[in-house]
Length: 178
Image (cartoon, rainbow, N blue to C red; front, side, top):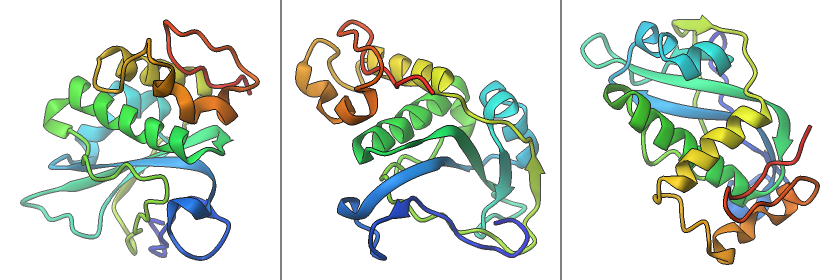
């Protein structure tokens, strides 16, 4: 990604990027326009849970653009949960670091992220574990932006991913234990 410039996206059942072809996702990424690598690496979520961050192909000295990459400890197999995870990460960046707010457009489960040949990057080597992602999702849902926790329809998309875990209507969807 940062050496040879390879792009990445979810695993697809067929070679077209549409939600119906979604199979699984074990890497989440956020685009942070206006944030340098040093700024991103100092954000606690990134410092403690991101695998690496790199400058995107459109980054310039005048307007840096960083991408933060999170490797999950287990795959997400439901596109609705993937979308929810992306939205929750975007929300987390917006609340925790408004100057480094994540790009709101990068939330579809089959998003294609370009790499950059010889990209400046920071390797952090972390894994984003289910319990941490669950906390971020719960915060997002509690904020009211992510949906009404008391509504059963707010959790329809979580069924496959949460079926082996606990479901608490007051806390929202529960990611199943690893």
